[in-house]
Length: 415
Image (cartoon, rainbow, N blue to C red; front, side, top):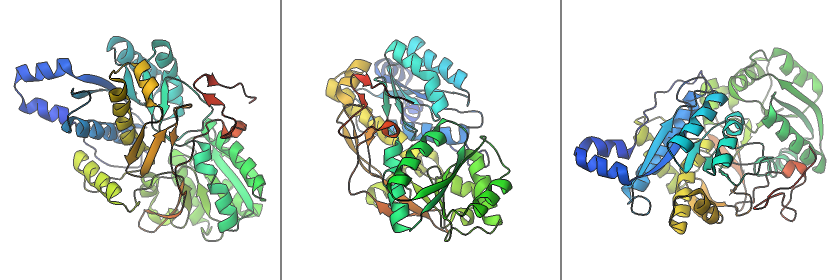
């Protein structure tokens, strides 16, 4: 995602370590009896820096599962394929994993574009995709477990908090020009108006856009007292830097973002993000023994004592354990067995308890708001009392009492 981030990450697994130390006949027997799962993440191209981290999180989870006895008494083997930061390649590699390798479950994809590209493969071949990135919703497939947050889990608590706790009344909405920012904007406008505030602008710049001087001047002249940012990628880094360079104060007119993780903050420099806000379910700074242990284990696994964790990485990790539980509950690795048993599965993740919704196959999780500090970490300034239900069609009026994504499929909604 951010080519300016520079980290060397080692992709390894307990299975590969065991293979080196075991005799050939033992390796052969173990491989023949192993449960194969796919990991489909970019190892090359512009998205590879982030997606290698997600692949590492999956492999860490598998290594821990194998160390504790595996699944159904069998070791788990990860077959890693490179999506090469290209939706067409993602589709081809998904077909290879599902059709040629006959793998029933794949953990993978990072962008909505890559998920959309592979979805027909999983639906046509009746395989399961576990997708960990927070996304815009408006999707309901029985062949996907959605482990990242959807709009109501990021914005449902966030917008009222901005209005009530920060006292902000005039929102300038800005985003990158593609589906996620536009869908998030649609939800935000409804919540802004319901909270008694107004939005004074809704602006977009193309993905990768790096010249933000004109847009920041627009923000300054708009009379807005808060910026709701759905900007992503390298554009995000350029935006925050220009914001500070033009003398904009996070204290007076804070940026409240839906996409700014520990990775982007490290890339831009913590001083540019300090004082701004972000709403995601997980932060590296969550001060619990479970999260501290997770960070330590992840850093050891990738052999980097300064490695960063963030929300999609945590979801990539915990979704493997949810898969394990579903397989063991159904005593089978088939897509049908996983689908029949994944609903209701819960897990004590590094960021807290998560649970798969039986209807939508999305994850219940706890909303959190963080404020970025000078050290590049987020201070949690607001958190839900408990995990809340995912509503992937929230932008189209979905509520707890009126579910639009169920086991029967998606309801027809007007776009």
